[in-house]
Amino acid sequence: QKLITSERKSHAAEIQRLKKQAMQQEREATKWKRVSDRKAVEAEKAQQVAKARLDQVGQLRTKYKEAERKLRVRVMKRGVMEKAGLDPVIVGRRDSKQQRMASEGTRGQGRKGKPTKSAIDYDAVRGFLDQKIAEVGRKEGIADKLANEWEDHLELVSQRDASLQSSDTPKEAIEALDVQIQYKEERIRQLAKRLGKVERGSSNTDQVDDAAFLMDHGLTSIIGKQSPVVAAKVAARVLFGMVVRERRRVASLARTASSLDEKAVEAEKSVSAKDIAFRSYMEEERRERE
Image 1 (cartoon, rainbow, N blue to C red):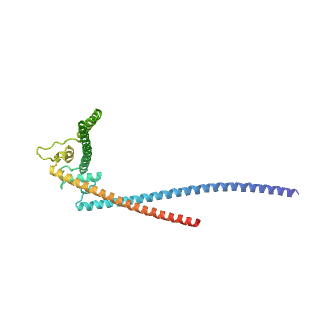
Image 2: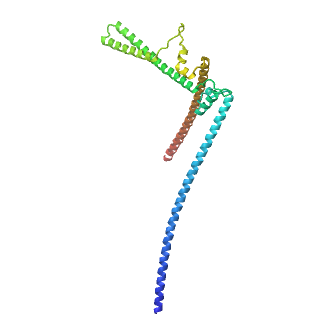
Image 3: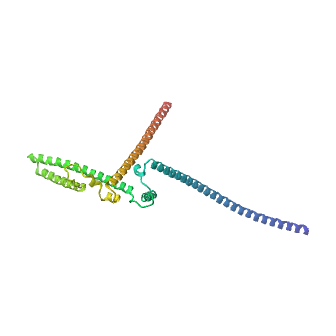
């Protein structure tokens, strides 16, 4: 009996020990499972980040390839146009800083590397002509306002003369017309002062001296000590390039307007088709209710 009791006690102790060991192993397994799950989540996040970065690298690579392609096309186009005698000045485009420095360095040296006359900054000439064109537009607007003010002045003067001839006109109305006429005269003087005046030559012709308008200090400071013939050629080349640029811009605007018109027509057709479909649907619903 004692032997059986001792065996039962030892058996129970062994079972208790095995249970504790099993529970400890289960806790360790749970712990390592949590660690494994955390590692799996971190690996998945790292994979997602790597995939996103790979997509970004792919986009950047595509972007750089497209930029390189555009650069090669631009260089090839520039070379072909230079062989055809069409430089950026004729086309109406501005040179970049590197191209301008290279061209000035090339033009500033002769065949044997000796320095020649200073190169002309075509971009500065183009900027000067743009300022002159803007000035012409501004003065044209002022002249338009002056002409309208002068016409209003003439109408007021005629009204005042008619009022003076009429005996029924009150004195206050005539004084009001005089005030308006004085205001118009002051306005005309201000506009004329803003418009300025160009001194004409000694000849008896009515033409304005264009040389005094174009060959001022701004252009001569850009041209330098070049002869007037060279200055005229430079101005002609730059003006031709500006005309080409404006025509290219107008053509681009025309293409954009044509594309917008086509989209508007398509949208109108789509709306019309949807309207017809909706009307037919409403008609069928009405017939089914009847």
